[in-house]
Amino acid sequence: MNTTTTELAGPSSLLGVAVGMLASPRRFRAPECREPLFERIKERGLEIDGVNLKYRSTFTFSGLIPRLMRPKLDWLAVRGMRPVDGTAAVIAPKQSLFSRRASDHDFVTVDLEL
Image (cartoon, rainbow, N blue to C red):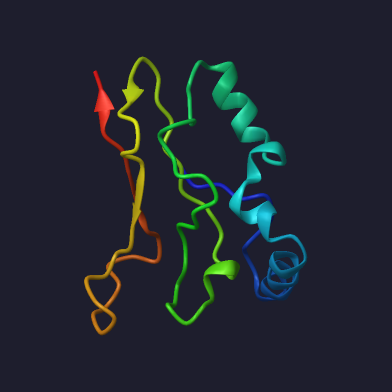
């Protein structure tokens, strides 16, 4: 699922988002306390702990954007499965510094015990 705590659409919002990222970067890396969707996830018996890397950004449309300015938009949620400890990962969608990105979102992965 993709989520953040602010509206990312429209040209005027980009400046506001950039200012917000500088003023409160953790908001975009750890949005759980500000985003109502996470409470709904828990209410429905889904878990995000252990299946996602904490504070690791997952979105950028350019490698030129500093990591501090990249939000964590992508999440996995599970029910009835347990993550294998230490397997949650975020993988960049490009193979080298000179290759093209396959996506503007990084890949979020985890190994699960069924």
